[in-house]
Image 1 (cartoon, one colour):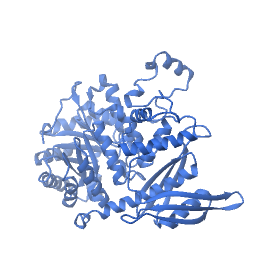
Image 2 (cartoon, one colour):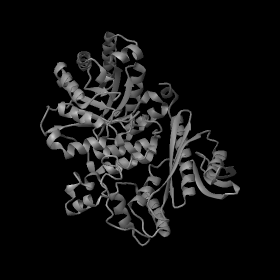
Image 3 (spheres, helix red, strand yellow):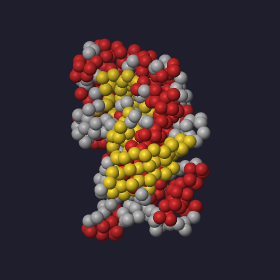
Length: 530
């Protein structure tokens, strides 16, 4: 594969954006995604123009391998990567998952810092170099594009780091990555390390130099931008800054910083920034992790102005307090009020402006849901539409559907719920199952009734209900997280009735669990052993 190496300095530099939301982002507690959700996010990343999509860690689980394989089958254009330790079994699993990709990349790594080599790997530096070279060569025989990462590079000896990089590039690595794995570096230190690697690695011109920063000290984006200015070619990041511990460098912040301060940073990328808002909302929906209101770029308050002085300035000239436009990230504006008399054309146009793209059948179902909501509310605004759209996507097989529920609750009686679900039964005819249960309140009673029907064996890890908009007729959006055997499954539901929204979210989480089990069952036994 031809390696793109850009010269340091100058506005002509194009930075490769490597998104690891589906791998490192998913490793954040409670952020696991099923196959359908991963595919939906991958297609959005491809549409945005993300250069490299790290689709997962194939050896981690049969579900991960199956998801990477499906993404490799569908996504075209972007490079698709799978992570692998410097172990033959990992590399074999990565290649098995990526085999169908148009542009596959095996991403292998080993730690290079003294503390990791001594206490985690229990290997001498010479052994680490030997293993790294051996595994890069092994991966290179399978895949023309191999990335090597020196885990904990920011706490590694710069001279040793250059030695490792020189060796793996000679062995065939087309990208070398220097992660700030524990978020320890400061911008000046990290930029200096980038310059040291460029100066001390004789064959660095034969590979792209990548950076991967964590946010433990809140410096992930600052370190990434400093690295770009110092000569990095590729930046690894995630949507909404998801990731282990405090998270990773946020893709939206890096992209918009380069776009807004190109005069200082002197580099650009090929990501379509107008899709950032929709991508952020999608990731929030499928992971169940809400974006904090004051989050840069995509937070609810990022373009909000409450101060009278600020409002006056913005009304006079938006540039007084807005250094970028809301439209530049695809942030929708309420240009059109939708109600029960609105037609399909206006609805379709607004849905498209919000960044949602569904097939004809799903759009028709969503329009019916919109009409039903419009009968309950006077007006339907953008946040209502977003809630409806998130409830409809990503689409996954529904083992169970809610048909009805009845609750009996009050301050002096035990809450009781009767829930009826419909199950297709995977290849069987539809059947209706009803159960009655009590609980500590109406929601708990409903959840208990559902558990009696499906027998999932899962535990409720998190549950929340929020108002989509203000007013008595506001929709409520419920989020549920179930846990079973170390895996988390997120569910989402929306309704003007918060009990119904909660029940729908619980059933959605159950369906996510069933869908993942089904995807694992579809993997050949020989692949499951990888």
